[in-house]
Image 1 (tube, rainbow, N blue to C red):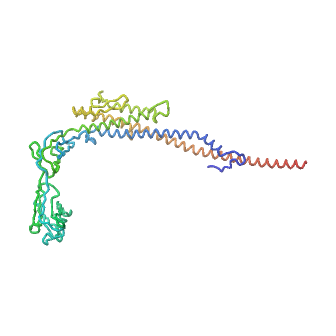
Image 2 (spheres, rainbow, N blue to C red):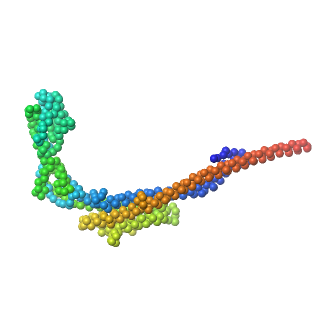
Image 3 (cartoon, rainbow, N blue to C red):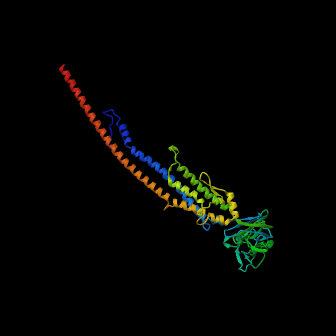
Amino acid sequence: MATASIGGLASGLDTSTIINQLIQLESLPQTQLKSRVTTEQNKVTALQGLNTRLATLATNADALANPTGSAASVWESLKATSSNSAVTVTASSTASPAAYNVTIGHTALTHRISYTSPHAATDVVTGGATTIELDRLDGSSVVSLNVGTGTLQEVAAAINDTGNATGLRATLVQVGTGSFRLMVESTATGAAQDFTLSLPGGGALLGGASSTQAGRDAEISIGGITVGSTTNTFTNVTPGVTITLGASATGTADINVTRDATARSNAVKKLVDELNGILTTVASTTAHSADTKQQGVLSGNSLLRRVSSELTGTIYPADGSSLADYGIEVDRTGKLVFDEAAFAAAYQADPDAVTEAFTGTDGFAERIHEVADLVSNKYTGTLTSVIKSGTDGIARLNASIASWDDRLELRRSTLERQYAALEVSLSQLNSQSAWLSSQLSNLSSSND
């Protein structure tokens, strides 16, 4: 605890500045510790950043190495194309490469009834009846719909009421000022969507229909085999393949289902780019130079240089071959180069061989995973251990800095007390000197 200072009152010295300078000199070891903490913290921060990227690389490589896991959409995906813009096709991982021609018979239709008589929306159109009858023509019971007072507007509202679950939608089509005709159609397509609407007892609603569109299933032909669907979508028309017809689809469509080399190439390129990014960072952070200003923050870190070397070496399988035939090589700077054209050519020639080279227990992706996980694993990773050691070391340095704070504060208090005592002593001596001078002066006057 600091004491009160009366610096310079007797001595004329700037004791406060003197004490501060003395403390500054004695705090040099603490300053060095603080500088060391900054250096070590920068190293730990850099290591943590690399460790996070290596952990991500390990995760992504593991996913790519296992085609039956999260990477199934990459290695097992197929690309499906159609020559007819009105016909779309998709293929899941259960599909097989194939090519065939599809002939469109017709698209699916809803069942639609357009009524003859126009009316105002508020006109009563049920002859006073408060209900109308819905028959789905499928053997189920007739449904009675409450239409209130029976106005045209209420009839449409009862059909559209979701609580009635009619499976229909009603629309009032304006044919003149304030004059409407009722159109009702099924919400789903297919031959089974036919229905009738009538008054109680079977009377015609609104004078009967002016036109009717019958519900219809969609129909296509594949190799002379006719296939039907209640909608315009044919799911698993062949295993894993779904075909969808546009509303105006006609004619034919050439369907091709092929392995998607592009998706696989993009996945491999992403992994290579991620690995190269880490190699570049390791090279810059571990760079050594006689000029300390050009040294990397992790200059001389042998662990990272070894990791860099092992990551680069993952392009070489255990049998001593390389991935050059599949488009991956190491350039003169030590980074990996991915030739997408070479990969595509190799995949077209032998897709199974390419898949095996990148997946499985000894594939390229798995080798990357093993190296990256060995270093970055949050429990056993070697780099993780180095980071923990560095963090613990920083904690010890900060504890030493805190001890120095207490030591310097105690030293400051001691100096302030010493200089305060000095000022008091000098003040007393000055007082005594003045008294003696006064006494001597009086003696001289008496002698005269």
